[in-house]
Image 1: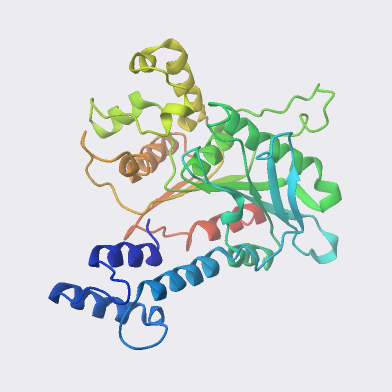
Image 2: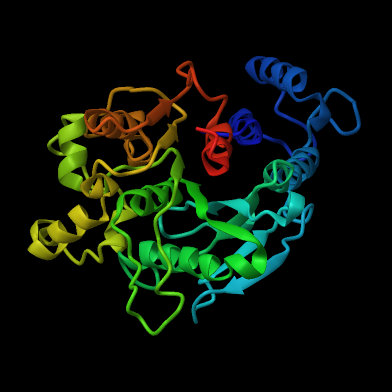
Amino acid sequence: MKTPIQILGAILLLVGFQPCSIAQDAKGVERVKRLLKRFPEADLNKDGKLTRQEQEKFQQKRRGERSGKQALAPTHKDVAYGDHEKQAFDIWLAKSKNEKPTPLVIYIHGGGFRGGDKRGVSGKLVQSYLDQGISFASMNYRLSDVGPYPIMMNDSARGLQFIRSKAKQWNLDSKRVACYGGSAGAGISLWLAFHEDLADPDSKDPIARQSTRIVAAGTQNGQSTYDMRTFREWFGVPNLKPESALIPFYAINSKEDWDSERVKKLMTDASPISHLTKDDVPVFMTYGKGDVSVDENSSGGLWVHHARLGIKLKEAMDKLSLECHVTWRDHSSEEYRDLHAFLSTKVKGEQ
């Protein structure tokens, strides 16, 4: 879902900025009036016009407010859980009453497995968890420019295990951990939620002995499958073209590669829904749009972030009597205010 500032930027570009003012055609003037009414703070000198300089300053200000990157320093920053620079996380430790171990929520960023960063998390959001006595971590992982699936999922699992290995030192309750993320980070969170425990109890490595199971998962525009066969079936579009992010994700070298046994096996294993069993945890999924139509000309950005991916997962979880909430615009949850209320409730063990 686009943020207000992204909408503003897109409309302003459509209007057509001039070096000192917006083009004063009739439609342009009307658009500017509507924009100024919605975002009066963008007009920095209050002269009723929007210059390119004002737009850029307003965008920078809003990005800073939205991200809160410098507003709340982590308790431990850039903690390495592997040798690669992307194998790191930030963690904010909540204050605890009576030294009781605190639950933990882990954010896993999105970006199509090709981009994104742990620093994108909002400081205001982190503070809202800390105020509830819930610790918070933000995780990086290796991307598809380093290698294909399963390194992204395995990295996130290893990061989770590393944090659990520090539970006593950091006063964390290792049994009350939830994961959530947007897009690719959502898919990783679901994969962790449904995949069998990756812990190796006989390992000489104390980190590898830690569990990868969590108590709940949350997603924003997330994928319950990464299998092109399933995408085509769910949308009823046999000719649906693969989304570009999936090409490096599966190390596709040719069109024929999609039909290879190697890729078929990877698509099944990468898809969270493939690992769903009756002992899995509650899920809350939120999407920007509802169950809108998709055809072979639809952009990958539409169908890979589509509410049907949540609806189909809910159908599968309902059959197993598992808790699953799917929300989008004008379709909210009756039980939880939002994703974060759901996660807070689950890690606290209130429901």
